[in-house]
Image 1 (cartoon, rainbow, N blue to C red):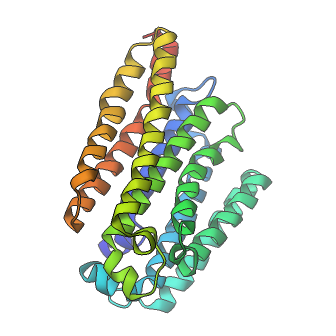
Image 2 (cartoon, rainbow, N blue to C red):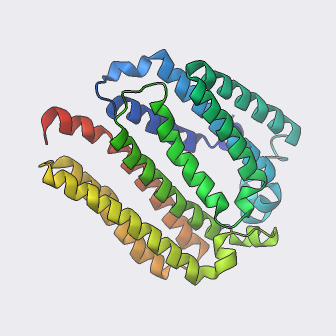
Amino acid sequence: MLPFLKLIRYKNLLIILLTQILVYLFLREESSIGDILNPYFLLLALSTFLIAAAGYMINDYSDVKIDVINKPEGLLVGKYFSSRWVLVLHLFFNFTGICIGAFLNYKLGIIDLFTAWLLWRYSVSFKYKLFVGNLVIAFLMALSIIVVYYPFRDILLQWLLFYACFAFMTGFVREIIKDIEDIEGDAANNCKTIPIVYGMYKTKIILVYTIVSIITLLLFVIFYFIYQKAIIYPIYLSAFILFPFLRILMLLRNADTKKSFSLLSRNLKIMMVLGTLSMALRWVWINYSI
């Protein structure tokens, strides 16, 4: 069971599920905790879960040669699961997820079909191309937030777009850092990732500019809520998102080993979760004006 959970990246799937729960509960005009049992929401979450899990499967299937170099201890396909079994399960998960999405909303079904195709193309082609793979994953992270809008039209769009932008930009930064971690195996397999093509110095410049853009977005939101006389939301964003990003900028300057970039990647993942949890503060702000 544990190898299968690793194959579908269960920790990442739980983060996606948590994100959609928080969007559904706290970014709607009116909602309550009991709404989480809405069968339409549960089906939406299941659809997303299945398609994302299928994406992780096909990615591991395509990454066998690279993973032998980058993380041989984490190799799953060929060790625990046959290639044929992974492909069959990948197709089953995708088909089921797309059918569920189409049942909920035909537009959602089209998005699910496009997402499944995009994940497949990413695993066999896009991730080896300059910028394309990074942008695709960042886009899909934002899309996992946006899709909640289609079955539930009472989602507040301005909040949804802010969190989608945050997910996109943070995901883009983390994907570049992961490329730096995997540079040895990627280079051996002729991948055209950003650190391979541009080198470490220019890659760090790209990261710095993107992080500064995230910080600018955060400052805009923080000052907006200060103007609105909110207290808890700007304090939370400053303490758990803004200042940690400033720290990452400082750590990035001296990062030069796989271990140091792995630490940055883990920190970013924690910040993404903390950023997602801040959705609950909208409900606090609306109901208690603090």
